[in-house]
Image 1 (cartoon, one colour):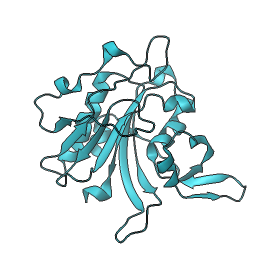
Image 2: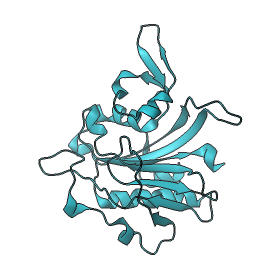
Image 3: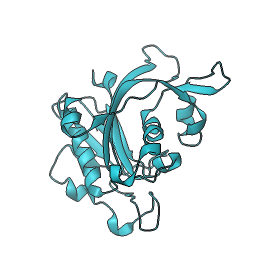
Image 4: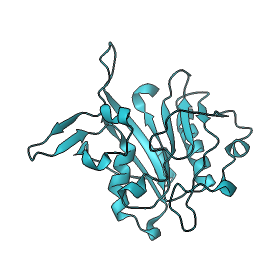
Length: 224
């Protein structure tokens, strides 16, 4: 938290329970299945927080104006996911994450990658950040976030060249609400990431604000 605050990120506090309907079609189907859902006393379908990123977008989008951007925010708290029951499975996890909202530049991508690596360096001697080097998307003149600008593609490998913490990797998996680069942060155990993130330039638009965004989330339990 001290590193994030010194870098100009302000904390946003989010509810642990929210209505389920606004997120329909936003999160991946498999991710939606991980949410605990129930009907409240007013008959509304609500869910317990299982993913911070869409909640941040829903909370900030209505109040975003051009003069307020870019925003640097961070969040912390529990997420609860309905995982398959198995010995040692933890359904409640504490997370800390950060976002830059309203900046679609390549510089914002590099800044978030380096920030994630800096945070991981506080816990691991040789952290590793694996990232997808292609697929940059930005705001286009006359277009919305997510419009592909071939001339503005971010050559991340050249920008991160010489830093052994960063390794490019082409990834073909379904990216859900992500629209650009993805990245994963590994500690001593290279088998499971301790953090992950990426760019989601159309997510805020779904909640009423045309603002590109990039962010990451650390799962504290994986660090410990």
